[in-house]
Image (tube, rainbow, N blue to C red):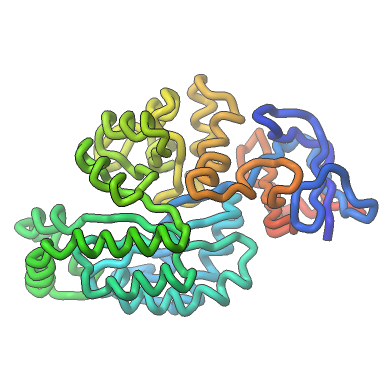
Length: 380
């Protein structure tokens, strides 16, 4: 079905303009089809659908409580519904493939991978996978390579959390947290963490194989939690052109000087700072050092963060919205979305400026979600 969205204020070519927006054959069109359904967007902002480069809130559907696992298909169906209600029309699920048993294990990855084709077929949101490969997870290397080769992986992230975990093994509270997530006894978890650390000399060769596979498949690479300039240079040498959650301002500045996108979490902006005490994302974005905001662990934070940036008084809405739409699309090599221009995907979120909440979401040109009461805006 084709659509004509009338009466709204459209984000087009970097400016907010009062205009209609036509959606034909799943894409933004120059002019509406004569048979198009009409959606009365009066008083609403007509904005590109959100592109989430890293969101792992789906883990709460997979494991709502420690040790309580739900079927991957059910979890993905629930996640897809939540994503749409948040205006996210392209979602890179942050799937951590770790040496830890349980939620982030090889078995969990295999179950999720098996459930993804049906979930993607049923979902209006374009569900993709940002595979966050833990450096020490050498036993799962072939699984990761298979996922890249068969098209299950759309973005590869280099993670290296094991050293930080090992440093916390003396803290019973921290060990209990990790062991609970893995479904293990504390002592068994300590032994496992120490055993995987003993194989770190094998990591460089594994990273090279992963990077080569990603380059061959044409998928982008990113590095996560770069702490130093040496870290950024190290991962850049593997082809990681996205710097995600840098731990120091100088790292973000170095990435931007190299023309690379820098990602930080939208919850950081919404909360006014990092929950880990790291850099505040909002002022870095205003200075151009952060170019992408991701949902991280809270899907609604993306849309909220864009408006929070506007309320700070430095960015206008088009520039703030680029942080959650055009820029992440560009970072991931998705030239067909993130903006509202003829020929691009018809991914649109209509927002009430008074409540700054979604009213309707169109995905690939089709009406995918309506807020309560918004059905009254539909016209023949």
